[in-house]
Image (cartoon, rainbow, N blue to C red; front, side, top):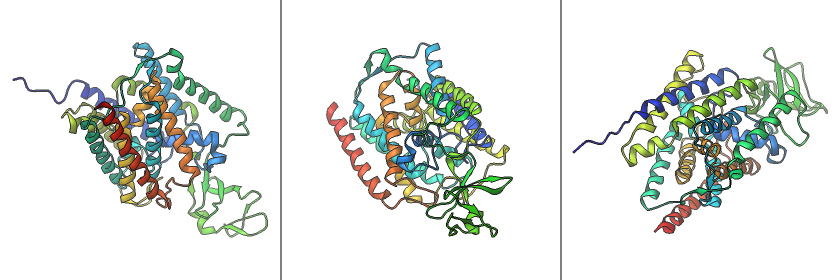
Length: 419
């Protein structure tokens, strides 16, 4: 009997794709993006949400239309059109997909990164990401259990062509707002983190810009200024931030970004590569365990290798657990959050990166999941549930418990529906 191949020719294509995506993501950090966050679907969608509703959701530190997302959508759409793979489809449990997208984003913001960034954090030497990677494996295992029990949200069917264009149209709208905010005047309703802004650890935080490495303009508190001893004082003369907290201030994630056109071109390239290769950050682990097929796993390995090599070349590699950018040291919280997020992604049928790519190909079900992620991002910050470098928010464990119960209910409902 002929032995079944566990690695096919697509493995090398996926490995090369992962290598390319990881390398570009690490390079984007060198171009100005946050540390170990050259690419993060969850974080970047969260920042986009902040631009539109940041004043309501308390996202002043993470509000910016990330051009990488725009590029990924338009690049994947273009590749799908050229290869005649753009097919408007949908109608497969849209409400459940919205909820699953919401839950994925919630778990990712507790971990501080999506399934892409978990590997990129590891590729930058951030050992706290190990707990997130273990959570990815655990979430995949839970998803496999659900699949073996018959979980299925149903098949998509052909839909009206205009519906399939929703996500690409959204990307065009985002591009218009990004250009206006960058080269014109930001709309009054919008929130955008100032480029190069730093924030102290005080409550409330003092926010300022740096010039030549030194604090210059004080953004918050309004009317505040820098005193001779290095502290920041409010308009009434009270100390808003000590000299020590000013010296220890960290850059606001939304204020760290590559030049718009650099981010946009990088996103376009990543979108084309991801669409053609079918890259997915959880599919490889799923296939390796479920069907002993390793092609997709090569993509994840390539992602890790590519980001590690470029981080080393650019001097961005910092091996350790302490002082990692946009990360916390709560191991159990990271594991649990990524388990919840990945379980949701498994029920969706692919990681958030894959959902964005499929939505760009005309899949309205994936677009619905992306909409759930956007709403989830706003909710997590509005409710004060998103983590910070200090650790998990006070009610994060309660939120994860509720999300876990919902996921179990969805898994059982999906299995019963197909029984």
